[in-house]
Image: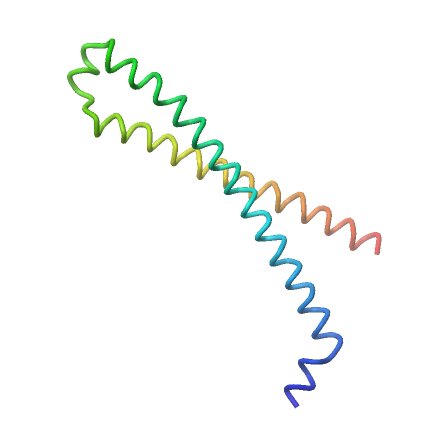
Length: 108
């Protein structure tokens, strides 16, 4: 009996809709990862240049910022940029897709 219920048209359509939602979620996540990685690279470069310059030019920074501190500054900014941009991208993509799906449901 459970086999017959799984083969019903209603069950097949709900599984297809679930697969479509899963594919859309994976696409949103993939876009977020790409955008986050790009932002992390840009943030790393934008942070590394002034950090290295300040260590060479400013006496206080030369005395207090060793290699570990410099790496920590750069990696913290890169990590924050990644997560912020990835989160915003996933939310924006999901919002865009939900509006698109809502307009398709209204028209259909």
